[in-house]
Amino acid sequence: MTATAVPARPATSGTLLALYRLLLRTQITIPRLLGIGGLGALSILIGLFTRLDPNADTAQSAADTVSALGLGVLVPLASLWLGTSAIGDLVEDRLLVYLWLKPVPRWQLPAAAVLATVTIVIPLTAVPLAISAIVADAAGVAPWALLSTSLAALAYTGLFVAAGLWFRRAVWWSLAYVLLWENGVAHISTSAARVTVAGWAASILGAAPDASVPREAGPAAVALVVLPTIAVAGWLAATWRYRRADID
Image (cartoon, rainbow, N blue to C red; front, side, top):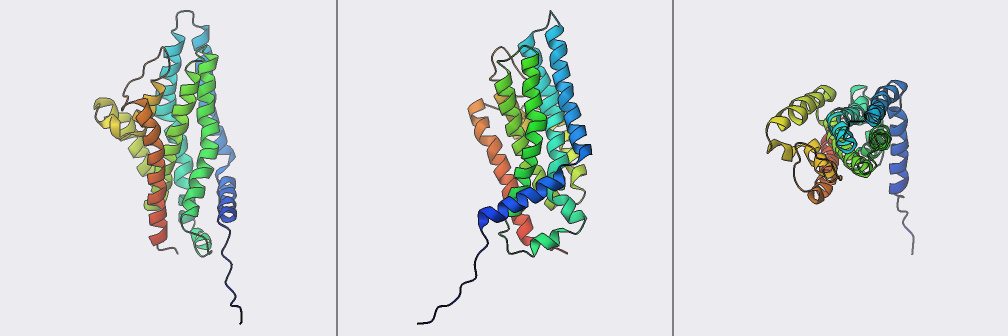
C-alpha cells in the first residue's frame, strides 16, 4: 500500500493571529492615537469639571457626557476612522491582492480587521468614558458606560469594516451615515432609534442608577443581544464581499 501525501492546511488559529497582528500594526499610528486619545482625555476633563461643580447631579451629568460625547461622537468616529481603513486602505493601495492570493480562509481577514480595530478603539474610547464617570463621582454609572460604549464600538466596527470593503471612499459614506442617521434622524424619530447602534447602546447606559438617557431603543437585555448581532452581521457582509471581490 502506498501513502498519498495530503497537502497540509494552514493552521486556522495561526493565520488568524498573523492577520490580526498585521492589521493591528497598520492601524496604530501617531495621528490616530493622538486624535482619538485627545477626545477621550476631553471626556475625563469634563468629568473633573462635573465633580468640582457643587450643584451638579453627578450621575446624570456623567450619563449625559457618555451619551452625547461618547455615543454621539467619540465611539462612532473612532470606529469609523479605524474600521473603514482596516481593509479599505489595502484596497485603495492595491495591496489586498497579496493577502487574497494566500491560501487563507476568506472569513479570517474581515474577522482579524474587526478584532484589531476593537483592540484599539475600546481602550481609547470606552475606558476613558468609564474613567470620566468615576472622576465625576458617579461610580455607579461607570460599569454601564464601559459596557454600553464597548458594545457600541464592537457594533460600529463590524459595520465600518464591511463598509471599507463594499464602498470606495467608505470613510465619507460612513461619516454621512453617522451624522445624518445616527445623530440626525434618530434624534427626531423615536422609531428610528431602534435601528441605530447608538440607540441600543443608550438602552444599556440607561440602566445605570440615578441616570436617564434620551433615544433608548428598547430594553437593555435586548440591547445586549442586538449590538453583538450587528457586529456579526457586519463581519458576515464583509466576508461575503471579500469572497466575491475582484482583486487587482
